[in-house]
Amino acid sequence: MSFYREPFLNDLLSIPATIRPVAWLCLGPVTHLEAVPDLERHGWRNRRPLQEAVHHDRWSPGPCVHPRPDHQM
View (spheres, rainbow, N blue to C red):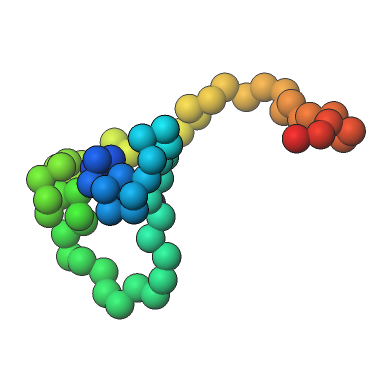
């Protein structure tokens, strides 16, 4: 998923005002990986240590709740 500016995306794709995009997905082959991530390169976010991004034991263990088998989505 890529980050985007909603007004730019709306104009680019002629999205009606009643529709709000939730994601801009980029599909296709990757020709190369940048040495510096886009968020950092464009000044949107500074890189942080991996330990600050990884969460252990974020949710307490508890019963796993599954919908009933006959539940229609």
